[in-house]
Length: 250
Image (cartoon, rainbow, N blue to C red):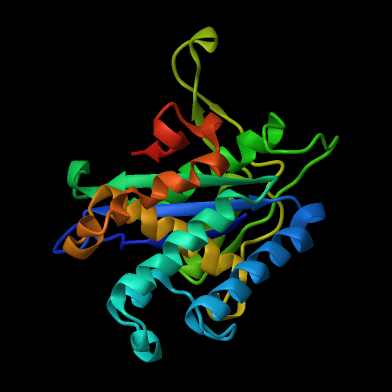
């Protein structure tokens, strides 16, 4: 699962009301095929906009601080994200997990980072264990490949969840919790530089579009970009939550 975030985890004087985590899940046997789809999209963007393969698609910066990509009109840069979403949504055998924390609802002591990452990792583990990702593989395990975040804190969280991972009981088990340590998420998280990973750039786009669905900027709303996350509906992991597009909301 390739993971990236949008927004920050602060609760006081934060510029964002929401913190978003998106995880793009790809079976290792499909890795090369999906990479080729991403490269096909990049080739299309080169022909359409002159976007070089080495130029990173970092969604927030692309719209607000484009640097050399300011040579493109702002609406064209948004079109790049729209086309990216459509290319990803048309890719077979991948799934998108999403967690949104509404920071306005949380107590001052609420650990946004810990709760968001715990929810995402639990959904990843649970979906693997129930074999609800595409493909009929007899045995499945998962790894986390992430853009840089609080690397040390995330690594410690994953290690702790292997031995202590309390899950609220379902009705048939009575009140309380069960401790279901991670079995299928293996190794420590692997951290990647986004400019060197087409997959991290893809999931960065997903997280940004979900952030803009929750609280769009004036430009994004004016251009209808606040609805672009819905274009990813074909690949959203619906078993993760009963909310629209399976988005886990905290």
